[in-house]
Length: 440
Ligand code: HEM
Image (cartoon, rainbow, N blue to C red; front, side, top):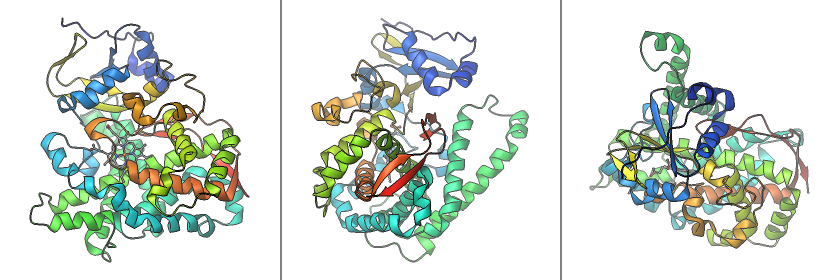
């Protein structure tokens, strides 16, 4: 059998127009639901030929079982060069291998006290009482995660450069998102239309490059136990295959990959805690009597962890994961052609009634009945297969410690009402979220 993958026919005559009118999440949900029997559905978006994997089994095939045939091709390469995130095949193995031991829980044990200290000081030192009455949540957590990540990843505190860095990174995110949906991809008209965006992109990139280069090679030496310091040891070792450029690209990518993902997760979590105050109390009751002196202690914070997993189920920050077929392939009798773009969406899977009872309801207790490990590719907050998120351990440590400081000190009240999601490269918040922090 070599059947064609069913093609989605837009009711608007053009899928590009429909995606613009409906928004990405509604559009992809509609496309996925348009096909009742097949597990794949094809959609044409401009020149791109997207194959949507509707089921967790299909996702498993593309991301886990036959991952070698499905490579990443991302325009992030323009900004971050070749690195663990942007490469594929043997090149990717060479980038991923030296990072694996560095990102283990055991290694982060030596950064634990520092992370705890940064987080607990942050609430009292960075903001005055007036700020806490009306806290801009995304800004607040971006600042915290930037401080944490510059300390842990590059071993220097670059907090003084936060404002400019934050603006630049947000700009890059917006730029990449728009790049994917540009109607005109090349030529004179493209240059004319996007001249301003392209030049702002160049300047943002230059500043980020400078920051990382300074941190890596010119600044006060990175602290002993930072990720950069550990990477530099690999870089200086005889067996290394890394050039100086590779090293800088890796570090830039890690900063970028760990920044918005973690801060947006904290922001969505704050939103859900405001909507479900009972979970503020449950977390408080769990953590008030739990002494947290090591990473192992975090394992015992099961309610807090489940609240985080549920936040990431409803709002998976990496909401769309794409791969490109290296060679022709076949799935359930349907032909996949070389260069087809496989679109797997944690958002679609996490919101499917096929896998979750009342998928739209915030219910962390669902993870008491089944763990994320048991869910396999039905739970994709950190991806799946060999290219699963390398920063999951680091993110979970930072997230649990951050919620802990937040909930043990304050009650949270939403001042902004309902917040919808805004799917850019990451799953952002559509409007600013303001929250009042009331001292407990
Ligand atoms: C809550 C926070 C985070 C979330 C939700 C998240 C999510 C993800 C997802 C879904 C992927 C898979 C992408 C794909 O398959 O195309 C991924 C990959 C990756 N993440 Fe994370 N991430 C988080 C935090 C971090 C942190 C803190 C770091 C590092 C400091 C990091 C570094 C990476 C890297 C390097 C990859 C690429 C791995 C590879 O291709 O081998 N992430 N992340």
